[in-house]
Amino acid sequence: MAEPPAVRQTIVQLLSHMRDGKEIREYLHRFSRLDQARFAVVKVGGAIIRDDLEALAAALAFLQTVGLAPVVVHGGGPQIDEALAAAGVETEKRDGLRVTPPEALAVVRKTLTEANLALVEAIRAAGGTAAAIPQGVFEAVLKEEARYGRVGEPSGVRLEMVAAAARGGETPILACLGETAAGVLVNVNADAAVRALVHALQPYKVVFLTETGGLLDADGDVISTVNLATDYESLMRSDWVSGGMRLKLEEIKRLLDDLPLSSSVSITRPEELARELFTHAGAGTLVRMGERIIQSSDKAELDIARLDALVTEAFGRRPVKGYWDALALDRAIVTENYRAAAIVTRLDGAAYLDKFAVLDAARGEGLARAVWRKLVGYAPRLYWRSRVENPVNAFYWEECDGAAKDEEWIVFWRGEDDLSRIPEMTKRILALPPTLEAR
Ligand code: ARG
Image (cartoon, rainbow, N blue to C red; front, top):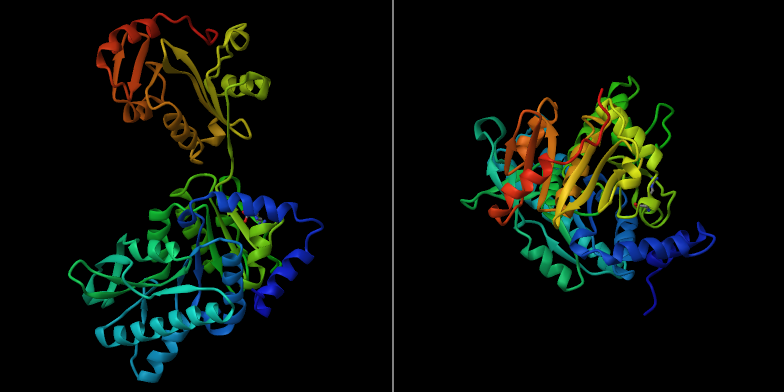
């Protein structure tokens, strides 16, 4: 089948940016391996549908030709403004939400449905197939009606139609209309809708297609990457960061906080989507949480000197002489910059957390939790001990299923399916020699 011109142009444009196809193949491989419902959620602003529909449709059709099926959510702000004005219905924004009395909701529904169909048709014209799903996905609870009118807060998503579209090889196109449990149609804020969808799907990528094509720096140039772990606070403090960008950053952080560390957010223009997705350098702004996490069962793969420095700094004491040589490592879970680490050994077949070290400077970045999440994912049945005065114990108490103490130590466990093992394990753990030098 010959590609329609718009799609072909996208491919040509994409390839012309590459010396060889290695990058594109790598990304294609990475994205294709994912369950396609988890590949990407793409949010499209209403202005794009109005002003840049052809490029948008071409970009989405292109993804389809390479076998990728993102879930698309669109708004329709500018169109709704226009339609309301034409209908002589006055509305205002309150707390960033469009106050939507019933007579406005009729206009909102009609306008969003039209925008939805326009996009679906344009994708078809570009040689793709798409499913129009203007409503029926977002479950919502009516917010304070006296204040906002028919505006709902998403409370869940029904994925049947999305899954059916995906099974049929169609790109699902969703609009931000919700329904309450009582079946009342409500207007849903687009960011809130994306949040609910992202929460349910846990996608690898969240893509915002905007007209500016990224976050802009003080000179108005697109910022290529933002690592929230390292950049968020300083960006939020910078005076050149506009109010709109601050809100955007907050929203993105909220999304990434809810996603695995491997997920990322890209902001780009439809024309650049393929380049953003299929090249390392990208075209737009890539936002990640920050540090990646390394897992290894092989000491030779780890930088022992850096681990030693991390443990020493985190505990204020160095490991006992010969600790690393004697360590029978089962698994180390370490952030890429060696700022947080979990070191797991085996004790009578159970996983034993021998060290959980987090740099002070890395606290509050979500790194410790990220490592912890990996840890309990890797070792659902886990034991560890901690000195009674360790300030981290509050966290451990939250995380454990049970604990036993003596004067010096608390032994914690979680996920133990055979409770009869606990006394013996506790005894063994309390008897372990110290692993850190005395102060
Ligand atoms: N293609 C990769 C991705 O989508 C990397 C994109 C890099 N983008 C950037 N603006 N720096 O995950």
